[in-house]
Amino acid sequence: MSDKENAMESTGSNTEYNSTGGNTEYFISRNTAECNSTGGSVADNNTGNNTIESNITGNDIERAILVSVQIAAGKHVTGKHTNGVGDQERSLNELNELALTAGVEVARKMLQRRPGIDPATYIGRGKLDELRKMCETLKADVVIFDDELTGAQIRNIENKIGTRVIDRTMLILDIFAKRARSREGKLQVELAQLKYRLPRLTGLGTELSRLGGGVGTRGPGETKLEADRRHIRRRIHYLENELKTVDKQRSLIRKGREKNKLPVVALVGYTNAGKSTLMNCLCKADIYADNRLFATLDPTTRKITLGDDERTILLVDTVGFIRKLPHELVNAFKSTLDEVVYADALVQVVDASDPEYEKHMEVTESLLKSVGALDKPMITVFNKIDLVDYENWIRPINTRGKMVAASAVTGFGIDTLAREIAELVKPDVLAADLLIPYEKGNIAAYVRKHGTILDEKYTEKGIHLKAEIDKSKAAALKDYLI
Image (tube, rainbow, N blue to C red):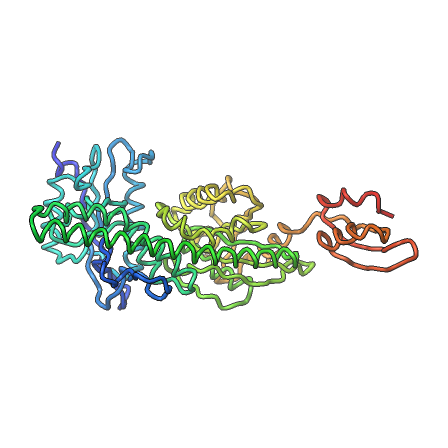
């Protein structure tokens, strides 16, 4: 069977998409697989001021064709079994949303079914020729593939179709580069970009080293490639050291929180589930929120009082998750994800109006498991409940922890959610009445460190303390209970 027979090109109203999202000042540039060895994109110094250029750098709207491959027999190119073409179509639709977020007009989506990927060009030769003609007809500026491509694949495809090629990871990195606001966020994104580009630079460099081998060809090509590698590795080393410093600073902040005994609750979930809007609703704050992918990159922490007993907690808004999240981003955002790892409890925010919400929960919980945070106390809140038929809404049965239906826009269920969060972090404490001999000053210090002092008196027999202390810490005090 030919590639054309196996191909399932998107046609009609469901497959050709014209962006109507308005004007944007960003577009995807050529720098996705190149690095200037003369001090342009990657600096030769370590001042921290010369960051790598974002792939989103212009002020024109580019037209794109999106391409994805579905391996026959329900297996995707990642090797994971899927439910067939539907899963990859949904992934392609998500790529469409990512492209719109990056300010790209999507002219056409193409999905090909094949027995396996072509190691040289990803899609088959027949489909590649069809893609070339499509680029000419639609005047496409860029082709975006829904999976990671190697440097060699990018080069081979571009040579065949004469149009710039990027992949899903490059697109996500572009969006992150645009959205990062804090210095930490910018460092993290740049590190992820460089680590992703380095092996692809090597792939592109293979072509440079094969340009004849004569005087003025092979030598300069290799020299430039090695210079690029050195610049990138030097910059990576610098960024990693800077992020280690950031990590130490965050550790000091966490120690301060522990000293103040304030429980930390992290909002987690798929991108665009409404975490920031929900946090604004709970905190009555004004955190940046928008109905688009990756509106929040930098973690935001707010002190909030919840529950009937007016319990004070720290609520943390975190970066949203997404399927096929580049591992470079997971690694680079370690200090940010540590906010989740070190939290006392989690609130998983789910977009109840999204037909894919169960898949989104799977992605979120898989990533939580990968960082060792899945077993934390958790509430699952189904946000945007105002956008569904609540009376006939089928409640999910396999949620972690208690389930709350809410709407950050209308306020429905917010009071219930606040009470459940307060209950989730309510400590299991023992009210202790203690008499501690003066020579046992270390015991008094232990109580002050691990408990809350309600009353303190100095008597002839010793220090009389009334305190609340976590039951797990109370065993060491049994000899001093009155």
